[in-house]
Image (tube, rainbow, N blue to C red; front, top):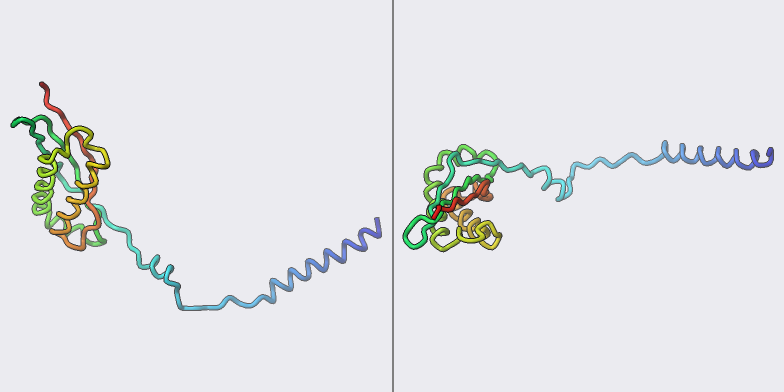
Length: 155
């Protein structure tokens, strides 16, 4: 037993001494004021603001000259930071261009059948984005469809 202790104890003492020496004698971390490109991008990113338009959009869907259903949508905007008041100041114009897009989409049959399918919503989203950017230019990142429902007429 003494033999084992005489071998193990000096080995443990050497290991502990080496670890302590390495810890205390390691070089100080270099202080730099330069940031990498990734850090610079992360620091400059500011989260967008989200603006919900106050009133819903009601779009009649016509079939054979009569209202076959009504589509009701709630829209919002993802905008650049600080642009919320600009959105509200231009809301009447935004509502007008959005209604033009929605009516055109309805007349093209976009709200018939499986109207929530991605194949139908992608062109609608693109048209809404284009309309919003025509009014607010670079302030708008995206138009958000918050809610969408269709109420079919009876009979």
